[in-house]
Image 1: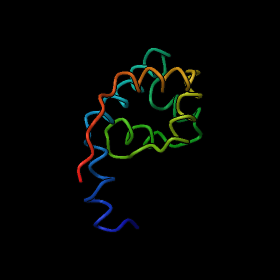
Image 2: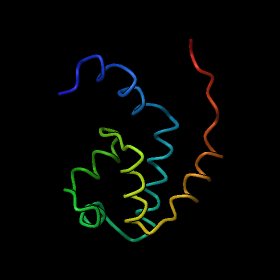
Image 3: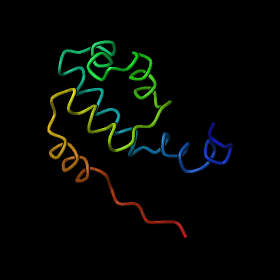
Length: 96
């Protein structure tokens, strides 16, 4: 079970980060462009439909491995996706 610190800290803030939300928006667009609904994608990922819904509603965060699985299920070149995404995400100065 995650601690309150994790829920309220960096991990939780990542879900609200506009850069992460832009990435999820791209994933949603790719799913729709592929003609798939959430249930179809979930079947390809061998996950329940709620897994896809929670990611798309910013209730669940994907790690890098899960991103790659998601992109491959959509038959999207993960290298191209990440290269394009990195170009679009503005650099953010670190807070110290």
